[in-house]
Image (cartoon, rainbow, N blue to C red; front, top):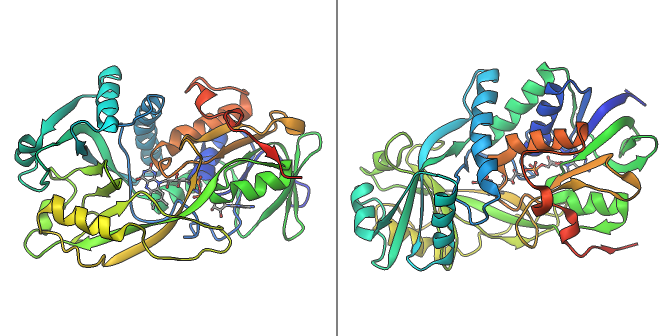
Length: 390
Ligand SMILES: Cc1cc2nc3c(=O)[nH]c(=O)nc-3n(C[C@H](O)[C@H](O)[C@H](O)COP(=O)(O)OP(=O)(O)OC[C@H]3O[C@@H](n4cnc5c(N)ncnc54)[C@H](O)[C@@H]3O)c2cc1C
């Protein structure tokens, strides 16, 4: 494959790169997808058993992206012939005067998202006592929620891309990208691929690769985080199963706690804290769960003793790539590369749900040089003060 010429070379086969590869082949592009590790490995951000999809956001620009993604998830799973999306309601909770809850309610109004704002008694009635909220808390319930199966979804996009003619190559680490009448992509084993354009979707490795190619550092911090699964006490397991009234959920306060109904592990419920520790993606600490005491306290308080909070029975480690404002980076690299290198990085722990539309946007930037899906001003690299590290 030495010196092969592609329309687009996509670097990084997590959910973003795999979705982009699928979208690029739909646009008829001769596509190459490169991954440094085995496909479907567990060392990045897109592996595991569940991700939440919800429309409720503090920042209004995510609403259209999530709404479009619901549609695109369903289209892709119809193409492949199996499901990666499992429907549930979504439920946010927090103190009645919590600014996030207030902003989310306002955004639901603005974007015509059907929702119910409930006091603690109404919450107890709606969910038959499964959530115990303090008197000064409120809950916000919407129909637009559910679980996505991450590893299965990445496999789905790779399968669809492959069926459409993409070349998929794993255990191929990209070490450099050179601007030469298009791009030349070099790998650690000495291979060389030519492309008209290139898309960089390297997750937590973004800073390393972008600094290497451009000399500039984008403020994207890799963070090691964990999901935890807790045992539901005997006799109560059925209350939390997906398909009933139990929702995907998020709780705002001292700790941002989130979780999903039982789907992947019978008898267990996923409840985790959005947070972690800075890390080097190539020297992972595989460390302990942050804010464990707050998490246990939350489980005791909210589930009224029917979930065993003594210890999580399953823990899985994963990485976020955090930007300072937690907005994504979707832009051209610019400089000598102009529009030849497109970046899709910095998904800040909340990108999975939007992967289908992000793949579409990235492939539009490759083909058309622009997108109508969203105003890219929220995602441009120009919003950061970037300094040359050369
Ligand atoms: C615990 C956890 C819970 C989450 N929960 C949610 C949720 O509920 N809802 C939601 O929407 N989002 C959630 N997210 C966020 C979401 O999973 C991520 O935003 C998304 O998976 C990011 O995908 P990615 O493709 O950018 O990164 P990755 O999946 O890490 O993919 C990047 C790929 O690039 C490869 N790569 C890197 N460097 C190179 C190189 N030089 N050459 C070749 N390949 C390279 C890597 O090996 C990797 O496979 C969660 C994330 C975590 C960790």
